[in-house]
Image (tube, rainbow, N blue to C red; front, top):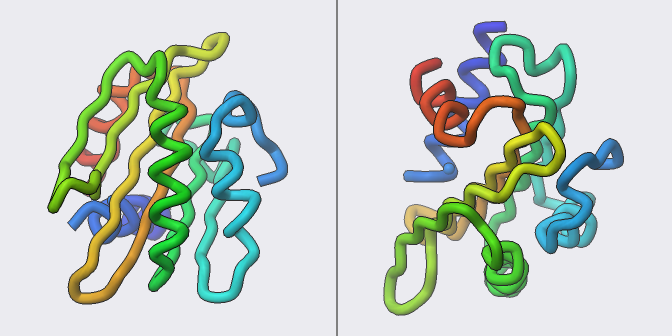
Amino acid sequence: MKSMNKYLVLLLITGFGVFPGLKAQSDLQISKVFDQYGERKGVVMVELTDEMLDGYDFSLFKSITIKDNTAAGEFIRKCLAKDEIGAKKVKQVVANGVPTSIYLQLPRKEQLYRLILFNETFRPEHKITLIYIESENDSEDVLKLILKKK
């Protein structure tokens, strides 16, 4: 379990210098990102559900990391712009007029809170990380939980 905690924290930290079993994500544009890029060479996609997430109170954790693909970054930002419509909370970091970090707290879908995290870095390498989390806990509580698990 400690290695799982370290992996999740490492994924968030490195991504933010940070699925067939789709649930509430299926109505989101970012589902296209996972479908289109998930099985490409050089891409790392992780999907965790159920007992793999014990201690986090998540029902779904899905992430994708893409290296050296500018087109993917543009595609993801277009998807996020559509998913941003109706979001409860939006936070962005913009560099040179382009959003490089985006946090979206989406409206609940049934009993699930939904959270999207996106980050694109260019140094030391070009890397894009997109994370989607579903939880019965409020999105703010999810972020606190992840950061506390360090």
